Length: 52
Image 1 (cartoon, rainbow, N blue to C red):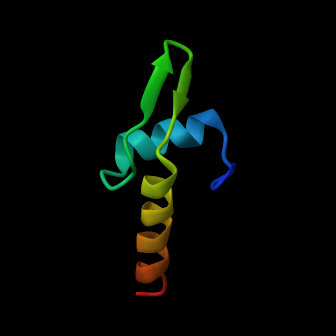
Image 2: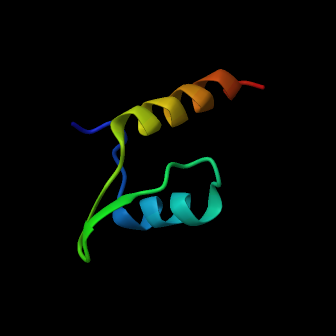
């Protein structure tokens, strides 16, 4: 299930520059995934601070 849609370069940028972005789970050298609950929490936190 896709929660955020962005290119790999944007994901790399988020992981590097946003300390609140969830850490990935590495399944193999070329495959990474994220915990869905952590992504949902990150999105909710971003929504809560929107417009401030």
